[in-house]
Length: 429
Ligand SMILES: C[S@@+](CC[C@H](N)C(=O)[O-])C[C@H]1O[C@@H](n2cnc3c(N)ncnc32)[C@H](O)[C@@H]1O
Image (cartoon, rainbow, N blue to C red; front, side, top):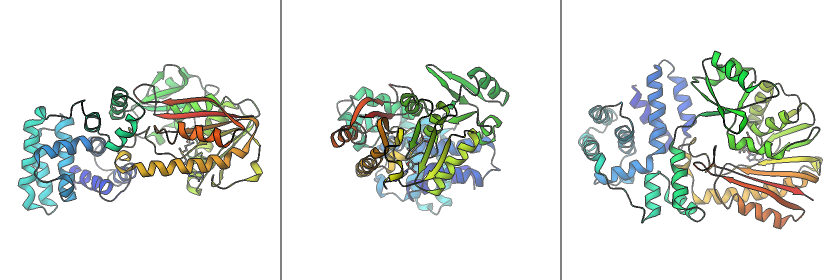
């Protein structure tokens, strides 16, 4: 198997068989550990890049193919897609090599009769790449959909709330490579000491302006192998996610309940801010997820936090009016993190986002009982979808007038730093 065959198999598993890109890539790279670093990087880049740009790539192919994309055999369609990705976005690969390898691969996979078709489409794309006309701004849906590779339904949804320029900036931010963001406990190690420590381990760490507990890391091959990570000196967490515990601002001795906590990012942050006092109960739905939280707790060395398996849709009378702070970081459509999940926009449908808004309401309706009078409830999602965010917050205060919305923020990629993220903080009277 050469690296292009592996790319083909990975993309077929994701787009034809519905598997998740991060799992397919992880399993493949684990299995083919003997491949050199360059080939592994090629596989990751071409698979993720082709998914990220699939909508634009299909538009390009449709300019040069008499056969409609959806009518093509999945193998041929996929070979064309990642061929076009290399032609347009990878200068390091000569166009002739892209075309020749694609033709060889089509033949190897039993499509000898379609060699001419694959060759014709890719050579035509290669010759005319600079002259393709894209939809103009007078048709904002097609313009944004093709230019930023966003599904049309999503563009239409966002156009109800944001202008073309804002969506364009978000789309561009999603397509930019992202640095790894981590959070550390300044009570445990200073920022400069951690930067120095990471440098000794071969990792470049950069300060994040305005975020004293965060760093951008680069130059990491395998995070789990870093001694500083194993020692629990930092946790992987996006800047937007850090805002939840910072906004909650726990006081010493507070009782905190996080009802959807895996892998534990926000719950651990709360436990750190409590400085060894109070207690955090970090819950999630399955044993597997709870195990993830436990691993992170063990690595952190924190003792004022425990992980518990509990379905947030089921009432728990033991917690009635016990929480000073309740964190409801609920399952959501994830439209704020499209940059990190390149296949998400291809599998998400307007219907699935609606369903999640319903689940969020169900959970909020149950967990609202756990907050003490005077306590705080923080509702957050990593999405950009009014139904799941602002509309749910309005619904919540209407249904449960004992709560007041005291702060609300929708963070947008390209406009704000970090992931697209929504936080609403309510106080119970
Ligand atoms: C957005 S993630 C939480 C991220 C986490 N708060 C953090 O900061 O690391 C949502 C979590 O909700 C969990 N979940 C989904 N349905 C649930 C339910 N009915 N009860 C409890 N947890 C649930 C998922 O397993 C997932 O881990």
